[in-house]
Amino acid sequence: MFSMSEKQMRRRMQFEDTEQVFSTLASGKSCAVYLGHYCNWEWIASLQLTIGENGQCGQIYHPLEDKGLRPSVQLYAEQMGESQYPYGRNNTRTHQTQR
Image 1 (cartoon, helix red, strand yellow):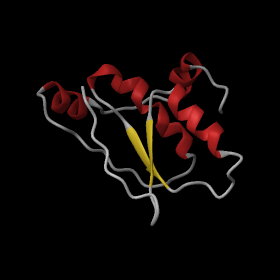
Image 2 (cartoon, one colour):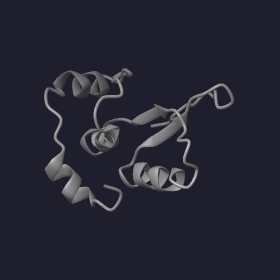
Image 3 (tube, helix red, strand yellow):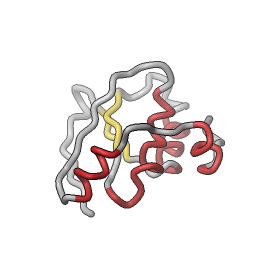
């Protein structure tokens, strides 16, 4: 998964019924899509590939217990164009994006 190219990801993961998201973003409004942790969360990182420059996608996540794996997960998200925001008692933070 971590070595998958953008082209491979686009072939394997496709989002459907995105019209409302795109029309909301096109009208200059913000849009939030909340998804639960279901199956392989790694696939959702590819949402930025679908959204493109129309908006900024990010994931709020609980930091992994395995500190050795954390850099790989962060790199993967960055390769897909996603931002990641750690959640937890000691990781609470505010983020503001610019378009």
